[in-house]
Amino acid sequence: MGKRILLVEDDANFRVRVLLGVLAVLLLVGFAPGCGLVSNQDKQEAKKKVEQEAKQAKQEVKKKIEAKGKQAKQEIRKKIEARGKEAKKKLGAKEQKAKKKVEAGKEDVEKKVNHVQKDVNDLQKKVNELLKKVDALEQQRQKKHK
Image (tube, rainbow, N blue to C red; front, side, top):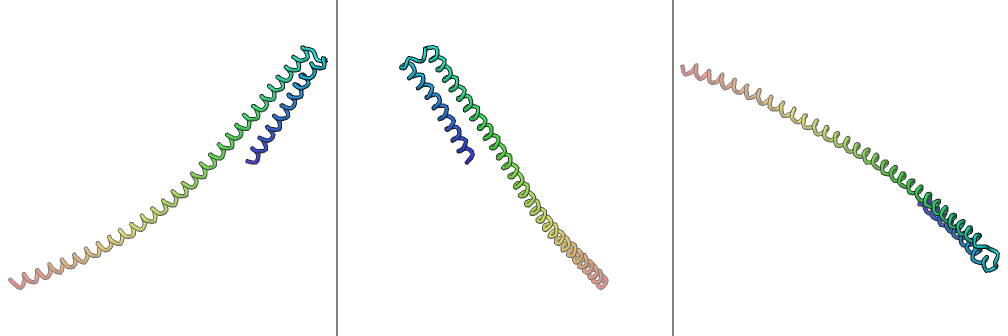
């Protein structure tokens, strides 16, 4: 921001100097006819010179403004790219964190499923044992009734 203020002040100072030079030439041209020292040709040459200097000054100011605009665009582009990279980096970090949470949740669910499966297997064994006992008791009853 400080650079821009200095550059604007430099442009303003430059413009003031150019305008003062033009004014000085115009004053000389204006007072000279009163003294009878300057001819019409000299007046026209002085006028052309002043117009040419003004045109040149205008072109220089235009070039400076265009250069500053170009520089500002490049700075903005760089800032945008840097922010984009930073945003991608943050997004990647958040994505990794989410993946870790999902993986931890998945492992937790797998442990629970394994535990439940073990319980089911244990219960199945107990059921099978009970069925064997029921079959054995049934066979004993049938032997007694015969």
